[in-house]
Amino acid sequence: MPKENSRYRWFVVVVFFFFMLLHQTDKLMIGSLQVQISKDFDLNNRQWGLINSGALFVATILYPIWGYLYDRFARTKLIAFASFIWGATTWLNAIVRTYTGFMITRASTGIDDSSYPGLFTLVADYFGPNLRGKVYGILQLAQPLGYLIGMILALIVAPMIGGWRSVFYITGSLGLVLAVIIYFGVKEMPRGQAEPEFENMAEMQTFKFSWSEAREIFKKKTMWFIFLQGFAGVFPWNVITFFFFGYLETERGYDANSILFTMAPVILILASGYFVGGALGDFAFKRSNKGRIIVSSVGVLMGAIFMYLAINTPIEAKNQFFIFMCLTAIFMPLSSANVIATVYDITVPEVRSTAQAVEYFIENAGAISAPVITGIIADAFSLQTAILLICTIAWGLCFVFYLGAIFTIDKDSHDLRAQMAARAKAM
Image (cartoon, rainbow, N blue to C red; front, side):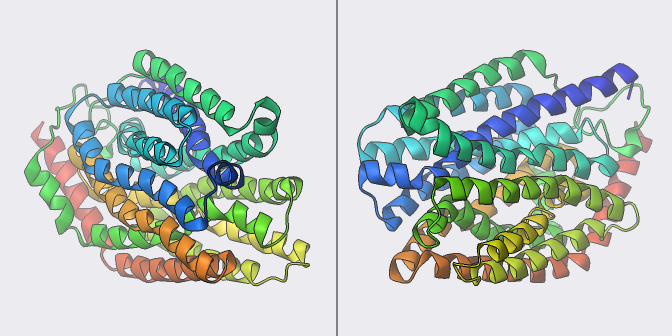
Protein backbone atom coordinates (compact mmCIF):
# COMPACT_ATOMS: atom_id res chain seq x y z
CA MET A 1 0.00 0.00 0.00
CA PRO A 2 1.43 3.46 -0.91
CA LYS A 3 2.64 5.58 2.00
CA GLU A 4 -0.14 8.14 1.56
CA ASN A 5 -2.80 5.43 1.59
CA SER A 6 -1.07 3.82 4.57
CA ARG A 7 -1.52 7.06 6.52
CA TYR A 8 -5.09 7.48 5.28
CA ARG A 9 -6.14 4.02 6.45
CA TRP A 10 -5.31 5.07 10.02
CA PHE A 11 -7.49 8.15 9.53
CA VAL A 12 -10.32 5.75 8.62
CA VAL A 13 -9.64 3.76 11.79
CA VAL A 14 -9.87 6.97 13.85
CA VAL A 15 -13.19 7.96 12.23
CA PHE A 16 -14.65 4.49 12.75
CA PHE A 17 -13.34 4.40 16.31
CA PHE A 18 -15.25 7.57 17.18
CA PHE A 19 -18.33 6.27 15.36
CA MET A 20 -18.24 3.09 17.44
CA LEU A 21 -17.34 4.92 20.65
CA LEU A 22 -20.26 7.34 20.47
CA HIS A 23 -22.65 4.74 19.10
CA GLN A 24 -21.77 2.31 21.90
CA THR A 25 -22.15 5.16 24.42
CA ASP A 26 -25.65 5.76 23.11
CA LYS A 27 -26.51 2.05 22.97
CA LEU A 28 -25.05 0.91 26.30
CA MET A 29 -25.90 3.97 28.38
CA ILE A 30 -29.40 2.62 28.96
CA GLY A 31 -28.02 -0.03 31.33
CA SER A 32 -26.79 2.69 33.69
CA LEU A 33 -30.15 4.44 33.40
CA GLN A 34 -32.19 1.40 34.51
CA VAL A 35 -33.19 2.81 37.88
CA GLN A 36 -34.02 6.30 36.53
CA ILE A 37 -36.09 5.07 33.59
CA SER A 38 -37.79 2.34 35.61
CA LYS A 39 -38.91 4.94 38.14
CA ASP A 40 -40.26 7.21 35.40
CA PHE A 41 -42.34 4.43 33.85
CA ASP A 42 -42.85 2.30 37.02
CA LEU A 43 -41.26 -0.83 35.51
CA ASN A 44 -40.43 -4.22 36.99
CA ASN A 45 -37.47 -6.36 35.85
CA ARG A 46 -39.53 -8.24 33.26
CA GLN A 47 -40.79 -5.02 31.64
CA TRP A 48 -37.26 -3.63 31.65
CA GLY A 49 -36.05 -6.80 29.95
CA LEU A 50 -38.75 -6.49 27.28
CA ILE A 51 -37.60 -2.96 26.43
CA ASN A 52 -34.07 -4.14 25.76
CA SER A 53 -35.16 -7.32 24.00
CA GLY A 54 -37.12 -5.20 21.49
CA ALA A 55 -34.01 -3.43 20.21
CA LEU A 56 -32.14 -6.74 20.06
CA PHE A 57 -34.99 -8.32 18.07
CA VAL A 58 -34.98 -5.53 15.47
CA ALA A 59 -31.19 -5.69 15.15
CA THR A 60 -31.34 -9.46 14.73
CA ILE A 61 -33.82 -9.56 11.86
CA LEU A 62 -31.93 -6.78 10.05
CA TYR A 63 -28.45 -8.32 10.24
CA PRO A 64 -28.83 -10.45 7.08
CA ILE A 65 -30.25 -7.45 5.21
CA TRP A 66 -27.39 -5.16 6.24
CA GLY A 67 -24.87 -7.89 5.38
CA TYR A 68 -26.32 -8.39 1.90
CA LEU A 69 -26.45 -4.64 1.23
CA TYR A 70 -22.84 -4.18 2.35
CA ASP A 71 -21.64 -6.90 -0.03
CA ARG A 72 -23.59 -5.41 -2.95
CA PHE A 73 -23.20 -1.64 -2.53
CA ALA A 74 -20.81 1.04 -1.24
CA ARG A 75 -20.16 0.32 2.42
CA THR A 76 -19.17 3.89 3.31
CA LYS A 77 -22.52 5.33 2.25
CA LEU A 78 -24.43 2.64 4.12
CA ILE A 79 -22.42 3.24 7.31
CA ALA A 80 -23.20 6.96 7.03
CA PHE A 81 -26.89 6.11 6.61
CA ALA A 82 -26.72 3.90 9.73
CA SER A 83 -25.24 6.81 11.68
CA PHE A 84 -28.14 9.03 10.57
CA ILE A 85 -30.66 6.39 11.71
CA TRP A 86 -28.89 6.18 15.08
CA GLY A 87 -29.29 9.91 15.63
CA ALA A 88 -32.91 10.07 14.52
CA THR A 89 -34.16 7.07 16.51
CA THR A 90 -32.39 8.20 19.70
CA TRP A 91 -34.16 11.55 19.45
CA LEU A 92 -37.50 9.76 19.07
CA ASN A 93 -36.70 7.62 22.12
CA ALA A 94 -36.17 10.76 24.18
CA ILE A 95 -39.39 12.44 23.04
CA VAL A 96 -42.00 9.79 23.93
CA ARG A 97 -43.78 9.90 27.30
CA THR A 98 -45.47 6.49 27.64
CA TYR A 99 -44.10 3.02 28.34
CA THR A 100 -45.51 1.67 25.07
CA GLY A 101 -44.03 4.55 23.10
CA PHE A 102 -40.69 4.15 24.82
CA MET A 103 -40.64 0.40 24.11
CA ILE A 104 -41.43 0.96 20.40
CA THR A 105 -38.92 3.76 19.86
CA ARG A 106 -36.27 1.87 21.82
CA ALA A 107 -36.84 -1.08 19.51
CA SER A 108 -36.29 1.24 16.52
CA THR A 109 -32.79 2.02 17.82
CA GLY A 110 -31.91 -1.57 16.92
CA ILE A 111 -32.00 -0.70 13.20
CA ASP A 112 -28.50 0.76 13.25
CA ASP A 113 -27.18 -1.69 15.85
CA SER A 114 -26.81 -4.28 13.08
CA SER A 115 -24.68 -2.02 10.85
CA TYR A 116 -21.19 -3.11 11.97
CA PRO A 117 -20.42 -5.91 9.44
CA GLY A 118 -19.77 -3.37 6.67
CA LEU A 119 -17.46 -1.35 8.89
CA PHE A 120 -15.35 -4.37 9.81
CA THR A 121 -15.17 -5.71 6.25
CA LEU A 122 -14.13 -2.30 4.92
CA VAL A 123 -11.32 -2.24 7.50
CA ALA A 124 -10.33 -5.74 6.31
CA ASP A 125 -9.71 -4.23 2.87
CA TYR A 126 -7.36 -1.65 4.39
CA PHE A 127 -5.36 -4.09 6.58
CA GLY A 128 -4.00 -7.58 5.87
CA PRO A 129 -4.65 -10.74 7.93
CA ASN A 130 -1.60 -10.33 10.18
CA LEU A 131 -2.74 -6.89 11.39
CA ARG A 132 -6.50 -7.29 11.58
CA GLY A 133 -6.66 -8.61 15.11
CA LYS A 134 -4.86 -5.55 16.48
CA VAL A 135 -6.97 -3.13 14.44
CA TYR A 136 -10.22 -4.80 15.48
CA GLY A 137 -8.95 -4.76 19.06
CA ILE A 138 -8.41 -0.99 18.79
CA LEU A 139 -11.87 -0.47 17.31
CA GLN A 140 -13.50 -2.63 19.94
CA LEU A 141 -11.97 -0.56 22.70
CA ALA A 142 -14.91 1.66 21.81
CA GLN A 143 -17.44 -0.71 23.39
CA PRO A 144 -16.20 -0.66 27.00
CA LEU A 145 -15.09 2.97 26.74
CA GLY A 146 -18.55 3.82 25.43
CA TYR A 147 -19.99 1.89 28.37
CA LEU A 148 -17.83 3.98 30.73
CA ILE A 149 -18.76 7.28 29.08
CA GLY A 150 -22.42 6.23 29.16
CA MET A 151 -22.11 5.45 32.84
CA ILE A 152 -20.66 8.91 33.53
CA LEU A 153 -23.37 10.56 31.43
CA ALA A 154 -26.09 8.57 33.22
CA LEU A 155 -24.88 8.86 36.80
CA ILE A 156 -23.28 12.32 36.81
CA VAL A 157 -24.27 14.38 33.77
CA ALA A 158 -27.95 13.40 33.43
CA PRO A 159 -28.98 14.68 36.92
CA MET A 160 -27.18 17.96 36.18
CA ILE A 161 -28.84 18.72 32.84
CA GLY A 162 -32.44 17.68 33.39
CA GLY A 163 -32.46 13.88 33.31
CA TRP A 164 -31.90 10.99 30.95
CA ARG A 165 -33.88 12.52 28.07
CA SER A 166 -31.41 15.40 27.76
CA VAL A 167 -28.52 12.95 27.46
CA PHE A 168 -30.32 11.10 24.66
CA TYR A 169 -30.65 14.37 22.76
CA ILE A 170 -26.88 14.86 22.99
CA THR A 171 -25.89 11.38 21.82
CA GLY A 172 -28.51 11.43 19.05
CA SER A 173 -27.14 14.71 17.73
CA LEU A 174 -23.62 13.29 17.61
CA GLY A 175 -24.90 10.46 15.42
CA LEU A 176 -26.14 12.99 12.86
CA VAL A 177 -22.78 14.80 12.86
CA LEU A 178 -20.85 11.56 12.31
CA ALA A 179 -23.14 10.63 9.42
CA VAL A 180 -21.88 13.69 7.55
CA ILE A 181 -18.22 13.03 8.39
CA ILE A 182 -18.37 9.39 7.21
CA TYR A 183 -20.33 10.22 4.04
CA PHE A 184 -17.82 12.81 2.83
CA GLY A 185 -14.59 11.69 4.53
CA VAL A 186 -14.27 7.90 4.20
CA LYS A 187 -13.35 6.26 0.88
CA GLU A 188 -14.52 2.89 -0.36
CA MET A 189 -11.85 0.22 -1.02
CA PRO A 190 -11.90 -2.66 -3.52
CA ARG A 191 -12.98 -5.88 -1.83
CA GLY A 192 -9.98 -8.12 -1.19
CA GLN A 193 -7.43 -5.32 -1.66
CA ALA A 194 -5.43 -6.23 1.47
CA GLU A 195 -5.20 -9.98 0.90
CA PRO A 196 -1.51 -11.03 0.73
CA GLU A 197 -1.99 -12.74 -2.64
CA PHE A 198 -2.88 -9.40 -4.26
CA GLU A 199 -0.05 -7.39 -2.69
CA ASN A 200 1.63 -4.91 -5.08
CA MET A 201 -0.81 -5.61 -7.90
CA ALA A 202 -1.38 -2.53 -10.04
CA GLU A 203 -5.04 -3.30 -10.59
CA MET A 204 -7.54 -5.25 -8.55
CA GLN A 205 -10.25 -7.45 -9.96
CA THR A 206 -13.68 -6.43 -8.72
CA PHE A 207 -15.13 -9.25 -6.64
CA LYS A 208 -18.91 -9.17 -6.68
CA PHE A 209 -21.37 -10.79 -4.33
CA SER A 210 -22.63 -14.18 -5.50
CA TRP A 211 -25.14 -16.52 -3.96
CA SER A 212 -22.90 -19.52 -4.67
CA GLU A 213 -20.11 -18.03 -2.54
CA ALA A 214 -22.64 -17.07 0.13
CA ARG A 215 -23.76 -20.70 0.33
CA GLU A 216 -20.12 -21.75 0.79
CA ILE A 217 -20.14 -19.95 4.15
CA PHE A 218 -22.31 -22.72 5.57
CA LYS A 219 -20.05 -25.47 4.24
CA LYS A 220 -17.15 -24.35 6.43
CA LYS A 221 -17.16 -26.34 9.65
CA THR A 222 -15.33 -23.62 11.57
CA MET A 223 -18.18 -21.20 10.86
CA TRP A 224 -20.63 -23.53 12.60
CA PHE A 225 -18.52 -23.52 15.75
CA ILE A 226 -18.28 -19.72 15.46
CA PHE A 227 -22.08 -19.57 15.12
CA LEU A 228 -22.60 -21.76 18.20
CA GLN A 229 -20.19 -19.82 20.41
CA GLY A 230 -21.76 -16.58 19.21
CA PHE A 231 -25.24 -17.73 20.22
CA ALA A 232 -24.07 -18.66 23.72
CA GLY A 233 -21.48 -15.91 24.13
CA VAL A 234 -23.82 -12.93 23.93
CA PHE A 235 -25.89 -13.99 26.94
CA PRO A 236 -23.32 -12.82 29.53
CA TRP A 237 -22.66 -9.55 27.71
CA ASN A 238 -26.34 -8.64 27.61
CA VAL A 239 -26.88 -9.63 31.23
CA ILE A 240 -23.98 -7.44 32.33
CA THR A 241 -24.95 -4.55 30.03
CA PHE A 242 -28.58 -4.30 31.07
CA PHE A 243 -28.64 -5.58 34.66
CA PHE A 244 -25.25 -5.28 36.35
CA PHE A 245 -25.67 -1.70 37.50
CA GLY A 246 -29.09 -2.51 38.90
CA TYR A 247 -27.52 -5.51 40.67
CA LEU A 248 -24.81 -3.35 42.25
CA GLU A 249 -27.34 -0.79 43.44
CA THR A 250 -30.20 -2.99 44.62
CA GLU A 251 -28.45 -6.17 45.84
CA ARG A 252 -24.95 -5.06 46.81
CA GLY A 253 -26.02 -1.66 48.19
CA TYR A 254 -23.74 0.54 46.06
CA ASP A 255 -24.62 4.21 45.59
CA ALA A 256 -23.84 6.13 42.39
CA ASN A 257 -20.32 7.10 43.48
CA SER A 258 -19.50 3.57 44.62
CA ILE A 259 -20.68 2.17 41.29
CA LEU A 260 -18.59 4.68 39.36
CA PHE A 261 -15.40 4.15 41.35
CA THR A 262 -15.80 0.38 41.27
CA MET A 263 -16.79 -0.09 37.65
CA ALA A 264 -14.70 2.62 35.96
CA PRO A 265 -11.38 0.80 36.58
CA VAL A 266 -13.01 -2.53 35.67
CA ILE A 267 -14.23 -1.11 32.37
CA LEU A 268 -10.84 0.42 31.57
CA ILE A 269 -9.19 -2.95 32.17
CA LEU A 270 -11.83 -4.60 30.00
CA ALA A 271 -11.14 -2.03 27.27
CA SER A 272 -7.45 -2.89 27.23
CA GLY A 273 -8.41 -6.56 26.90
CA TYR A 274 -9.81 -5.99 23.42
CA PHE A 275 -6.48 -4.79 22.06
CA VAL A 276 -4.52 -7.35 24.09
CA GLY A 277 -6.77 -10.11 22.76
CA GLY A 278 -6.37 -8.92 19.17
CA ALA A 279 -2.59 -8.57 19.52
CA LEU A 280 -2.26 -12.00 21.14
CA GLY A 281 -4.44 -13.45 18.41
CA ASP A 282 -2.27 -11.93 15.65
CA PHE A 283 0.88 -13.17 17.40
CA ALA A 284 -0.50 -16.69 17.74
CA PHE A 285 -2.00 -16.67 14.22
CA LYS A 286 1.42 -16.02 12.68
CA ARG A 287 2.57 -19.28 14.23
CA SER A 288 -0.55 -21.38 13.74
CA ASN A 289 -3.97 -21.08 12.15
CA LYS A 290 -5.28 -22.29 15.52
CA GLY A 291 -3.79 -19.29 17.34
CA ARG A 292 -6.84 -17.01 17.45
CA ILE A 293 -9.09 -19.88 18.59
CA ILE A 294 -6.71 -20.85 21.41
CA VAL A 295 -6.60 -17.26 22.70
CA SER A 296 -10.41 -17.09 22.55
CA SER A 297 -10.91 -20.35 24.44
CA VAL A 298 -8.62 -19.23 27.28
CA GLY A 299 -10.54 -15.95 27.50
CA VAL A 300 -14.01 -17.46 27.99
CA LEU A 301 -12.83 -20.15 30.40
CA MET A 302 -10.99 -17.76 32.72
CA GLY A 303 -13.77 -15.16 32.43
CA ALA A 304 -16.30 -17.72 33.67
CA ILE A 305 -14.10 -18.73 36.62
CA PHE A 306 -13.48 -15.19 37.85
CA MET A 307 -17.09 -14.08 37.34
CA TYR A 308 -18.21 -17.03 39.48
CA LEU A 309 -15.79 -16.00 42.22
CA ALA A 310 -16.85 -12.33 42.02
CA ILE A 311 -20.60 -12.96 42.24
CA ASN A 312 -20.12 -15.34 45.17
CA THR A 313 -18.02 -12.81 47.09
CA PRO A 314 -19.76 -11.64 50.31
CA ILE A 315 -21.33 -8.18 50.05
CA GLU A 316 -19.11 -6.75 52.78
CA ALA A 317 -15.90 -7.90 51.02
CA LYS A 318 -15.86 -5.01 48.54
CA ASN A 319 -12.13 -5.14 47.84
CA GLN A 320 -12.26 -8.84 47.06
CA PHE A 321 -15.26 -8.30 44.76
CA PHE A 322 -13.38 -5.51 42.98
CA ILE A 323 -10.28 -7.68 42.45
CA PHE A 324 -12.30 -10.57 41.00
CA MET A 325 -14.19 -8.21 38.68
CA CYS A 326 -10.89 -6.77 37.45
CA LEU A 327 -9.64 -10.30 36.72
CA THR A 328 -12.90 -11.10 34.92
CA ALA A 329 -12.46 -7.95 32.83
CA ILE A 330 -8.98 -9.02 31.69
CA PHE A 331 -10.26 -12.22 30.09
CA MET A 332 -13.82 -11.35 28.97
CA PRO A 333 -12.90 -9.54 25.74
CA LEU A 334 -9.98 -11.71 24.55
CA SER A 335 -12.13 -13.56 22.03
CA SER A 336 -13.97 -10.61 20.52
CA ALA A 337 -11.50 -9.29 17.92
CA ASN A 338 -10.33 -12.83 17.19
CA VAL A 339 -13.81 -14.04 16.24
CA ILE A 340 -14.14 -11.26 13.65
CA ALA A 341 -10.65 -11.93 12.27
CA THR A 342 -11.33 -15.68 12.14
CA VAL A 343 -14.46 -15.16 10.02
CA TYR A 344 -12.31 -13.23 7.52
CA ASP A 345 -9.54 -15.85 7.69
CA ILE A 346 -11.87 -18.41 6.13
CA THR A 347 -14.34 -16.49 3.88
CA VAL A 348 -13.83 -14.78 0.51
CA PRO A 349 -13.91 -10.94 0.41
CA GLU A 350 -17.14 -10.52 -1.54
CA VAL A 351 -19.31 -12.29 1.07
CA ARG A 352 -17.56 -11.30 4.30
CA SER A 353 -20.23 -8.82 5.34
CA THR A 354 -22.84 -11.52 4.78
CA ALA A 355 -20.80 -14.07 6.75
CA GLN A 356 -20.37 -11.74 9.69
CA ALA A 357 -24.00 -10.63 9.49
CA VAL A 358 -25.12 -14.27 9.70
CA GLU A 359 -22.85 -14.75 12.71
CA TYR A 360 -24.31 -11.65 14.36
CA PHE A 361 -27.82 -12.79 13.45
CA ILE A 362 -27.25 -16.03 15.31
CA GLU A 363 -25.62 -14.16 18.20
CA ASN A 364 -28.59 -11.87 18.53
CA ALA A 365 -31.00 -14.78 18.31
CA GLY A 366 -29.57 -15.66 21.71
CA ALA A 367 -29.34 -12.04 22.80
CA ILE A 368 -33.04 -11.38 22.22
CA SER A 369 -34.05 -13.71 24.99
CA ALA A 370 -31.21 -12.87 27.39
CA PRO A 371 -32.76 -9.76 29.03
CA VAL A 372 -36.18 -11.40 29.41
CA ILE A 373 -34.74 -14.64 30.81
CA THR A 374 -32.59 -12.61 33.20
CA GLY A 375 -35.60 -10.59 34.31
CA ILE A 376 -37.71 -13.70 34.92
CA ILE A 377 -34.96 -15.41 36.95
CA ALA A 378 -34.27 -12.17 38.85
CA ASP A 379 -37.94 -11.70 39.77
CA ALA A 380 -38.22 -15.34 40.84
CA PHE A 381 -34.92 -15.51 42.75
CA SER A 382 -32.43 -12.62 42.54
CA LEU A 383 -30.24 -10.72 40.11
CA GLN A 384 -27.23 -12.45 41.66
CA THR A 385 -28.65 -15.86 40.74
CA ALA A 386 -29.55 -14.73 37.23
CA ILE A 387 -26.12 -13.24 36.50
CA LEU A 388 -24.27 -16.20 37.98
CA LEU A 389 -26.23 -18.89 36.13
CA ILE A 390 -26.25 -17.22 32.73
CA CYS A 391 -22.59 -16.11 32.69
CA THR A 392 -21.00 -19.34 33.87
CA ILE A 393 -23.15 -21.68 31.76
CA ALA A 394 -22.82 -19.60 28.59
CA TRP A 395 -19.04 -19.15 28.80
CA GLY A 396 -18.61 -22.84 29.61
CA LEU A 397 -20.44 -23.71 26.39
CA CYS A 398 -18.30 -21.24 24.43
CA PHE A 399 -15.17 -23.02 25.65
CA VAL A 400 -16.50 -26.33 24.35
CA PHE A 401 -17.36 -24.82 20.94
CA TYR A 402 -13.91 -23.26 20.60
CA LEU A 403 -12.37 -26.65 21.26
CA GLY A 404 -14.33 -27.94 18.27
CA ALA A 405 -13.07 -25.10 16.04
CA ILE A 406 -9.46 -25.99 16.84
CA PHE A 407 -9.92 -29.19 14.81
CA THR A 408 -11.45 -27.50 11.73
CA ILE A 409 -9.69 -24.14 11.34
CA ASP A 410 -6.59 -25.45 9.53
CA LYS A 411 -8.51 -26.85 6.58
CA ASP A 412 -10.86 -23.87 6.22
CA SER A 413 -8.00 -21.37 6.39
CA HIS A 414 -5.91 -23.31 3.89
CA ASP A 415 -8.86 -23.52 1.48
CA LEU A 416 -9.25 -19.72 1.48
CA ARG A 417 -5.55 -19.06 0.88
CA ALA A 418 -5.58 -21.56 -2.01
CA GLN A 419 -8.64 -19.85 -3.50
CA MET A 420 -7.04 -16.39 -3.21
CA ALA A 421 -3.81 -17.68 -4.81
CA ALA A 422 -5.79 -19.11 -7.73
CA ARG A 423 -7.54 -15.80 -8.27
CA ALA A 424 -4.26 -13.87 -8.13
CA LYS A 425 -2.71 -16.21 -10.68
CA ALA A 426 -5.69 -15.78 -13.01
CA MET A 427 -5.39 -11.96 -13.06
